Amino acid sequence: MRIVALAVLAALAGCATPQNSRDAVVPMVAIERAAALAPGAYPGVFVMTVRASGRQGSSLYLNSESDYRDPRNLSLEVRPIAQAQLESRLGTPVDTALQGRTIHVDGEARRVRINFTYDGRPTGKYYYQTHVVIERGEQLLSVD
Image 1 (tube, rainbow, N blue to C red):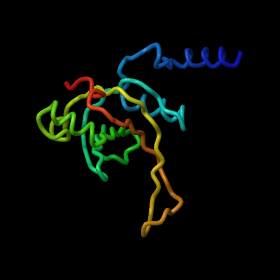
Image 2: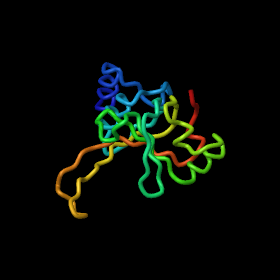
Image 3: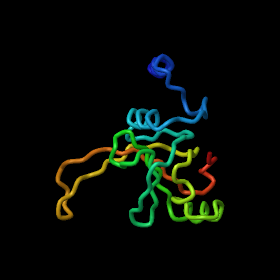
Image 4: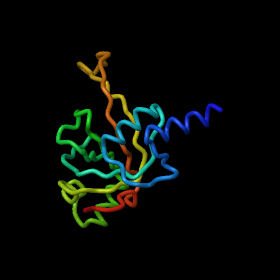
């Protein structure tokens, strides 16, 4: 009975289940759905315009907002293997090729806790970002 009630609530809230719909989801919808499912993830196809990029370690981050700390930002974490595959496919570095472009990506949006630190130690303060990890180049479905 509980499962039926949850299904009815999801239908009333307009939350299509990923299994039934592969329509592209915009960043704010991805952020809301990932937060609702935390600590789980929301699978889907995500559409966003790449407004900024940055690197941390070996990962490249593509951001839907110019400030990656913006609560409306969806970050795509492009892992090294996917970077190499995409650079081969796009013929130029990923961040250069996708800057300002609208892209469709298949993956899972997950809420990630970001801890503030001082002198390398956690301060106890934090905020959340929403990330989609790109492990393979074929997760990038299209570029407009």
